[in-house]
Length: 156
Length: 266
Image (cartoon, rainbow over all chains, first blue to last red; front, top):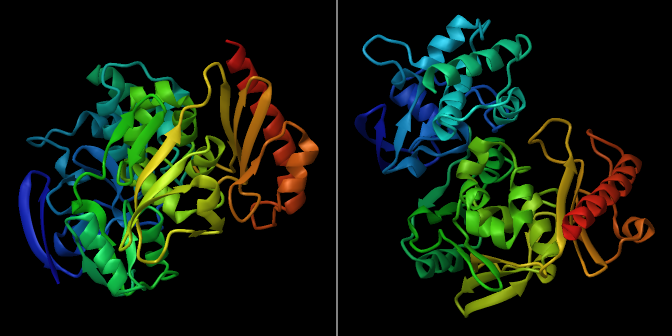
């Protein structure tokens, strides 16, 4: 067992874990943060995307022990005082989800994208390229791209 | 749990990492984990131990100088992609890095990890080869430099000794006035390429390095499509036949030359 100290959604967490425990399973099973979804578990689908020190990362492609000393943000950490994060609100407004399985990964990837490109105008092609690592199996990506543009506008 | 059990070491120095490698030849080095962790998840890799380099100081840097860009092995791919000085010295780096996986992958994936993993379809090994770069490796016998062309041997196999740790990757500047291009064809953006090419042209000479069409990056000092075809050894898989890859090499090689020549003329 190895000791891991991380900050998760602003709260300091310390646990003894097996080194082979994936960050995705650490979040879901050890911390009960089941908003981070697990799809392919080999880095293709993007459903498990979280923020590590503000940058997007696949939580299924990381061991929990690798996050020692880092700050992790999951979809549970976005809303403030009962108010949806602008990206979450934009997804709702644009109907950018159907079954919702891929949504937390998309929301985290979009949050990182808009933080990185704050104040910039993004073309739809740029949005699609930035989100190419997130798969939605329900339908097309039209409304997801629209949600990003809404969120970009409301944050810009 | 997805990965098989392994011991986990977090050395603080390169020497400690080398000692761990020396003591256990089944241990593998963990850098960013974007290739290794999927292999663990699918249990295609069952190492006795992981040697995680995350706490080894001094392995994350981008230093552009007269001769080129020196990059610490643990530098995240995204950091190199965004580095203005690296772009100025070796613009092909950014063009190639934008083809590597997706932003979340590049946020974690390291430059040294991609080079040491030696996937024949990967972009960074091809950039290193086409620029005639080298890597720095430290082992129990000290530190040595290995030229890119001597480094990549077979799929996922390099000339790094089992007790050595890759510490630096050096990308030389192409001659001034030269042009470059990095292109590939993928089924979906960010997927492993069916085939790809990095090209540098200068003073009428052309050097191309193809990916995904051989056991290692295929370097060719010629702008003749026949020479490319003679050098490659593509195989078929679920994404495309060998013949299709041969055709891609012809098309991508031509497009890369056109783009590189247009840029060299600017």
